[in-house]
Image (cartoon, rainbow over all chains, first blue to last red; front, side, top):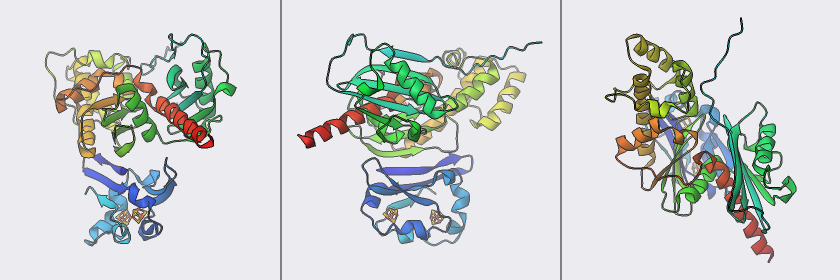
Length: 91
Length: 294
Ligand code: SF4
Ligand code: SF4
């Protein structure tokens, strides 16, 4: 499943897209420890696979949460840690 | 002096029992209970066919709301909780259904419910609920392939509609029809944000706009926001709308106009899609278990 967490407001759109079918097979779950803002968490999805999601309390502040990583100009730590290319950003 | 407080946002609660199943003597009863932020639904299936349901406001205590909803749904059926083989809780209060056997997320349940209500050709579902609005893409079995919601914006949600209903002192159920009583569609209000909408609507009323025109401009702005969400998640026909706001033609017809498509016509109350999906998944789980056990 492709899960999009985030929002759109007057300043733009801020969605993190996660392909959870890849997470189900990922044992390392590197994104969780790589994210300096601790935005990722695991959950058992409806098919009893362990996948990751963006924590509920961060979903409408992503522009601020990810600002430092984005300002860096490099590939974001979460994407660097994810070997299956399961994460992408809308901005 | 007593001041009468009218709550314009209140919608009508309802329950239903299938008139084609006067007395049920089948083999399997399953249930789904959807506890949303503003409304709670309970759906009972008899051998996979909708038997009864209820749709009511969520009270301050979620477990009590779940019990009230299932009792109201069972009212004319002669069933008791013991007759229900399997119950699934869904919605934001899903962990608070005391008699449930399992919880499933509302996105999964809505897709399943929409697949039943609208048929297997549905690919894009717009669920407009009390607190949030989601775009869901699913396959022919009603399994979710992608979803997107706007966690910040009240556009296309009951919360957004209620603010405007209270502000203009019109019933939430009348907003849709009233919003078309304009000679010409006004430009959308610049903000659908519930915080700014209030001052903007007040300003427009002061400048001589009618209530109807303000409603039209507000519904138009909400529809534009929702269309962006749908397009971003990927729009594929057939298209269906579920949730309480699906009943608000002021927003839904404008979404259709902007996108140049038509949403499928529902065969039953769209607000029960989540609970219906939960009850259908409950039935599948029981059947799978029974098949395994032989
Ligand atoms: S590292 Fe990538 S594949 Fe693994 S859980 Fe995180 S997002 Fe999913
Ligand atoms: S960009 Fe940075 S803060 Fe945002 S999710 Fe990735 S690692 Fe976390």
